[in-house]
Length: 214
Image 1 (tube, rainbow, N blue to C red):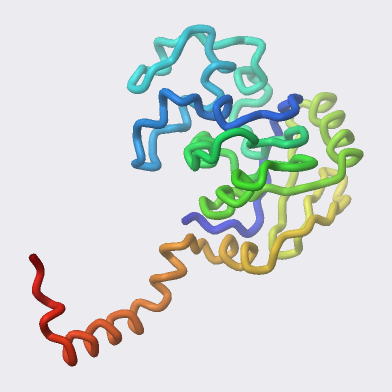
Image 2: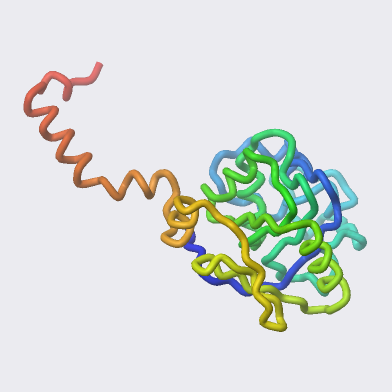
């Protein structure tokens, strides 16, 4: 999993409440479990005017010019600004996969759906909860100033505005540790690889019949 330490990125404001996971990555794209290739279909039904299916070349699609991510000023955005209850709906892990593969590293919102919130941390994506009033102010600035960027410093737990004002945020210590070190669940397990191998060797030495398979 990619580490998250300090990230500075262009901000894209998505001014919608209750964005669900089917909007983030529609159901027809859930056939794959490879964890790759979902970025082109992020927000597919909002991003394109035609119906999308797996395997389509994005270059042949009809983009929706009114959708925020299709506007030239937000090209290359890596910080998503959202409204309350972002990521509600089904528990599909494909949603954070798609956001990450599109290029987003952090999402700022007043609240997130619980399962989506947890899945973000497991996939190297940082969800940041800030008060409504602060999010409102960031929306105003992102809309008013083309090229508006924010810096997210995970170690110091703060979002830094262009004027150097720091906005503190909370993050659970274990989740912070995993993101700073790029450790997903598999990575955490592999930190004990030597102990696991030693246990398996001892187990087979005392119970050699376990080495046989049907």
